[in-house]
Length: 89
View 1: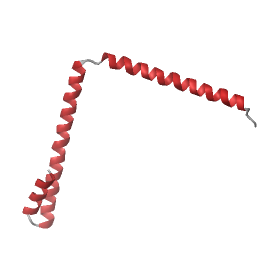
View 2: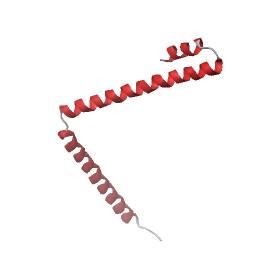
View 3: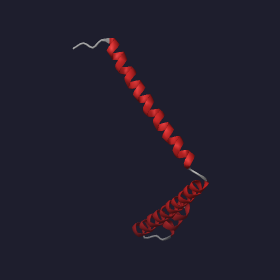
View 4: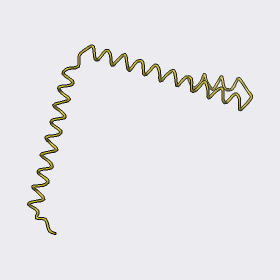
């Protein structure tokens, strides 16, 4: 089955047009959503980010402490894991 080049061009142009329409619609929706965001939303997001960052740091510290304790059990030496924990954190 042979497809003519003009029908290929029309099909390609149709794809381009529909893609452009979708992209512009997404852009318009994003602009609407951004316009509704105020300072209170920004403050809320900053607090949420800070909380998540603190939680991550807490888990990071606990993980290294546990790694140090596991190293102490395997090496039977309590000084080395403490140094390891202090260097990592």
